Length: 146
Image (cartoon, rainbow, N blue to C red; front, top):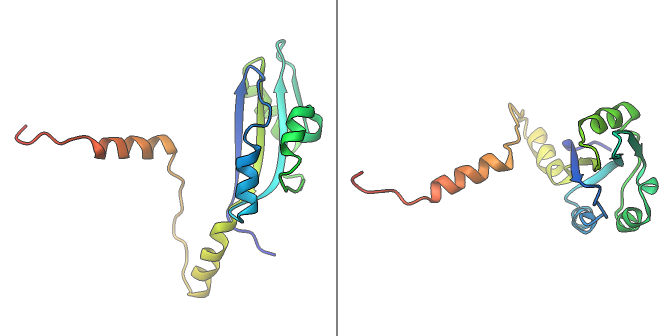
């Protein structure tokens, strides 16, 4: 089986308040066939700056229960070095969810481009903040005669 584009993300939660509230949104994306989660892990930095990383099952019962119904694989794409580096960037008393996913929605388009003899020349992600700023700017009223 081939893969569509694969991405990773780190979602930090200051104050170690993460309880798995984003699990329903991820579950919806998986169930709709939009993404396929290839790996998930959790990292925590305590008050003294010690980093604790582990599988979701080790993250605590509330977090594990929230993600229990999310279909994902543990393909080992997130390794101990990744977790150490991510943990080093967190503030004390913070936690983070690390996720690797495949953009399944893009696989069909990618296959169609390949079958048509096309070649993707460039593909870039535009940060949400830049898109929002451009939309906000475009929505501003234009002063006539100014």
